[in-house]
Image 1 (tube, one colour):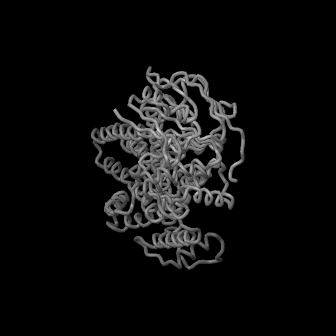
Image 2 (cartoon, helix red, strand yellow):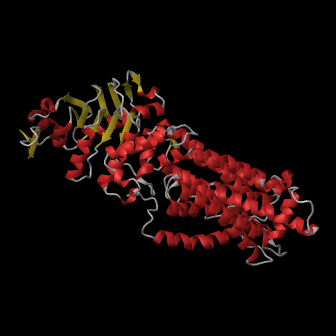
Length: 260
Length: 346
């Protein structure tokens, strides 16, 4: 196994975030258990991305705290944090021509000091990560020649090379066709680490997540298993559309129908 | 690029660089043969007991041409690596080392020395000193203008660089306008277009050591420079303290650019195109972009300086005219190529 099991617990307490007097996040408190695949859903502007950005320390909360392993994340040195949490953010603009191999190797950055070179362990990890993300056959291609789905998988491989216990994904299936969406979610679900993913597609959340957090208007509306959370009442109230809830006969997972 | 191919290219380019340096020492009003150059240098180093070279030949080689060629190589390499680093810093492929106001600041300093005689107590070092001071002051102003709430935004950095450059150019132009001295005005023009004519041993050492230190620091930071290209957010999640790293890069790059400009004026185009050529041929990994940029930048300026000396001899052509004349069309050709991404990403 690539990863050691450590009881990682991420905790958000009374988290608030305000920009120019507009309150984006209001009093968010939640706990994320280790090893689970957590989906975050909610309408546009409900604060999903903002909350994730605070969790991976791109933004600083106005008040409240985020603790990783009972330690406030802002007290953790950047390298240490990068060894515990990897992120595939929504826009990963890649400039110039990097090869896939070079890019995945960048996932090893948090483990490197000024004078350290890439050793055989790094090359092994990079190879494993590329195989896991199904981009090994592209190792020597340059990024600009890849499709959207392939690029996403390369970014995922880079995050896997960080060998963290937590992986944060912001809308990982955006712009992907259905085959690549399902492949990516399958791949992520099998990882033995904690996954926190903001998702737009509720049926994907229903099919893959162990737990779903519903956000609405900057607050956590509900948290629970897909069965508990994805109900007609909740969805109609939060997403303001008519919803029919049924079961996908092929997977036995919840399947949602929308109408207005 | 794999290791053996990389070392092959490096050795090939080093040979080209040494060859062009020897060629550059040969060319000039007094013709000198390659064997004579080697002989004189070996004699000077104490390896050879005696030499057939006349005293005059020795002085031309050792005191005039060698320092000039060395300075050309150092300035070319410096501007090329500074350009490469700045392009990663602002994640913008049209950036060059002067984007932070270095050259316009240096111009104000140099112009005030040439036209108004400022810092005359420093004698022959006044020009370099004033240019360096102007360059560094301009960068400091640009840097603080770009800071908002303790963070520096890269687009603000670019825009304040442009704004400060405009204001400082206006100051230079005003001084030129008000000057009555025809000779002084021409001297300023010459300086602004760049020249290695002032090269002597005493002003080779500071650029050399600054280059050596900055090149080492940049090469050791190649992972961080690579990560910057992935975007600020991703770089931060890779454990890089973005704000601190940016200040570090701005500091060392402006120091080296300031030193280069102080000894040679603002030679254009090297810092912009050399990193592009390297990326086009060898990929984006800064681990190889930095050393290759340094070597190719050095070759480019050594050759351009030969052109500057011989094209309109006995007059000397400002080297900036040559770099722009060669660099411009080449860059246009590069732009028209389909394959090269030019750093647009998507």
